[in-house]
Amino acid sequence: MKNKKILIVDDQKEVIRMIASQLMTEEITIEVINAINGQIACQVAEEESPDIILMDWDMPVMNGIEATRRLKNM
Image (cartoon, rainbow, N blue to C red; front, side, top):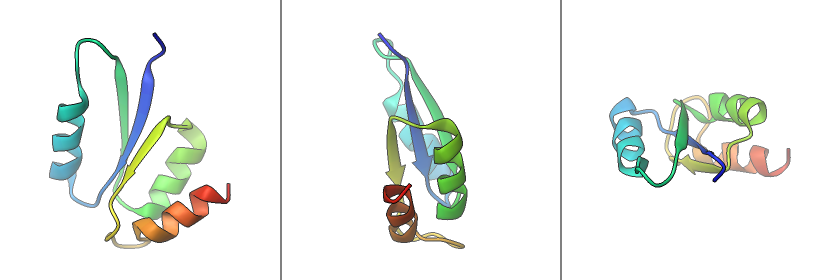
């Protein structure tokens, strides 16, 4: 089975750690990458091509809504 890559975007590192720990299972190998705002998320998504992006909406620099719009248009 192909490894899945998930990008978690949140300005609170504790939230990223909590979500990542809940996603880890023995059945599926998941590579978790993260970003602390929407602007970084767009850069990371372009470089890493994640299978799934979990995005917070309320973040500094660029919020999740604007980041989602940009990613949709890539």
